[in-house]
Image (cartoon, rainbow, N blue to C red; front, side, top):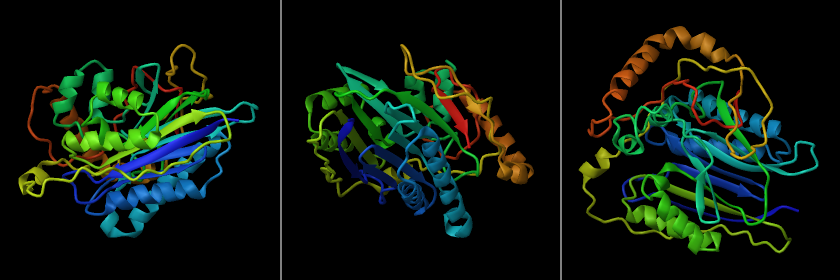
Length: 360
C-alpha cells in the first residue's frame, strides 16, 4: 500500500504583514494555495479554496479531483460576489492526490492553477513538474525572454489563471505512478523566488526528515529576502504501515525591526481582475507520461456562462491588457519596479505541456 510521510512549514516572510498562503494535508491528499487581492482578500481566498477541497474528500478518481477543484473555484467566486470588500480576490492552487481511477493501481495526480509549484526530487535531480500560469512563464515557453529577463520583467507578477476569477477554470493535470523513495515538494512562489534550484536540491538531499527540510527551506527563503509569504509542503512516498505524519511549524527567521516602509511599498501585490475569456480545446483522457512527465496538450472545452454574461462589459479591459502585455513583452530589458499586478487572460499554448488541461 502506498503511504506517505509529510511536513508543512509556512511563514509570513520579512516584508508582508499578513500570510495569504494556506496549506492542507491528509494521507493521500496535499495542497498549497497562495491568495491574492486586497487587504484581506488573499488570505480569505486561499482559506476558502482549501476548506472547499477538504469538504469534498475523499477524492477517489481524477474526475473527483477536478470536480473538487472546480467547486473550490466557485466557492471563492461566490464569496467574493457576496462581499464587496472581497471583490477581485483569487488564489493559486497546486494539489498532489492519490487516486485509483478504477484501474486497480494507484496513481498520483498533480493538478495546478496559477504559479504555485510542485517539484519532484530524486537521485540528485530537482524537476519542476508543473507549469506556471503567468505572463512571463508563457513568454519563456515561447522563447521570447530568458529566465534572467523574466526575473526582472515588469509583468513578472501577472498571473494568467487563478481560482475565484471566473465560473470556468482551466486546470493542468499530470498522472504519475507512485513509488517508494519519491520526494515531492509543493510550494508558493515565496520560496522559489528567493531560493535557487541548486539550493532547493541541496536542502532536499541533505535533510531526510520532511520537517527539517521544510523548516530549512523557509529559513533560506527568509535569509534570501523573505519578500513574500513562504509555504513549503514536503511529501515522501513510503511503502509500509509504520509511517510518521508530521506537521512542522516554520523555523522563523526574525525580520529586521527597521525594515523601511519604502521597502514594504515596493513589494508587488497581485490584484486579480475578472478575465475576459476562457478558451478550451478538444478533450482527451489524462495520459501516463512515458520518457517525460509532460505529454501532448489536450483540453476540454466547457462553456462558461459568466464569460457570456460579462464578456461585453470587460472587452475594453481585455484589449488594454493584451496591448499592454505585447508592448511590455518587447521591452524585456526594462528593470523598473513592477506596479501592482493584475490577472489577465492569455491563452497561448505552452511548448511544454501537461498531460491534460481541463476547462471546467
